[in-house]
Length: 125
Length: 435
Image (tube, rainbow over all chains, first blue to last red; front, side):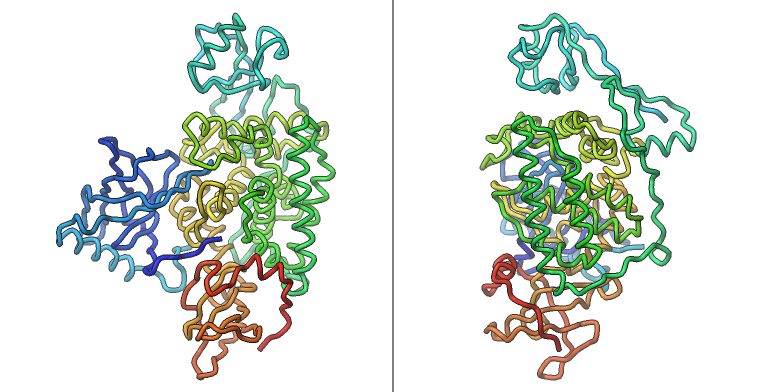
């Protein structure tokens, strides 16, 4: 069993977080956004992504002041392809981004952190 | 709603990728096909058929509309209610879909012993169950029939352990061995499904049946060639299509068992169906996915995500629950997905955790009422040096030697500071001290 290895754990993508569009070689793949921090995220789908590790990611956070992230460069660092579905870990290429985009990523993380329920990571009825 | 299976005679020229060939115009033995029934996955399959046959029979399904409530419930119980040309007569009547009461009103089972008392029996049970599943897989490869009585015996042993204290076997599901993936995964899904069904307050006959479904859900993988099943690398698209055939192989294998159980067949066939209709092998709509398959699919995904395969590494329990939560109502039944997240909780037994004062421990057990404050066996001091084994019960809000309240800061990877949950159990450390 491998547990959380990241220095900065990812936060669950809330219902306000859209699906992510991953573009690889000009083909778009819609994936479920699973968890996130300002340096990367996990996505999941029943479809498999091509083996290429370079991709571009788009998603939005639909809160009171929506934040839109469009086609930021990322590297696929981790793949777990199973019969049940496929999970991919993306690392954003921060060094290739403009400051406003980095600020947007940080604001999304901050929103998720503030809206997280401390008693339960997963909102349960 | 009723689902009917039938065979349709099709000329080779009319065959398409995605059709399931169940019969040829000649005995299978007179052809080069190794499998007696297969899914057409490419034009090459059609070309191969064209060389040896003039026509074949493909499987078709008919769904009647305007279902009554009674019919809807029967359909939800799955294909066990179907009329089939495969001449299968259920030996057991299909069970009714269990109602899941809300948390406050559901049947509650009380543990009859502590996790420490259950550990040694749970280890024996796990070892026996895993070897029994491996023996079933080996037997299938030698064309032996599955012994359902033996399977039920294994499941009943697992149920007995889980009813005494479920935390012990749940802990054992966290020790993963890449080499025995299929057998280990099958028994893990059996354990998780039984413990989940117990948590849902289902009655014992449902729990036993769910356990059997969990144990045999992947039995069709015994028919997948070893070089694909154990491939040390990414599957090609074609290999992935072959892997997906394990659902059909499983159904066929289980149908050939003399005292077969229709719910078990349903689960083997339908545990990769999804609520959004994007599953396989059929792409059933939600109301037609057997209820037990909906339940087993969650335990199956949880164990798959938290397991290492030959070609990749596992993710944490937290990550698996993130995926299950985010896929509620897409891949998984929403109510069952939320209940499963509640059942596993934040720190499942076997989690290695760092306390807020820097001490390190392993979660021994947790209760529904105190998911954030489980029982923890401390193994390292804050300077990470070995400490005399001490169990703290966080729900009693104990304080550390500096007078500060004990809290869990975070879960840490297995292997950190030399703590490995597998080694820990192999060394047979006794959990015998409490504060």
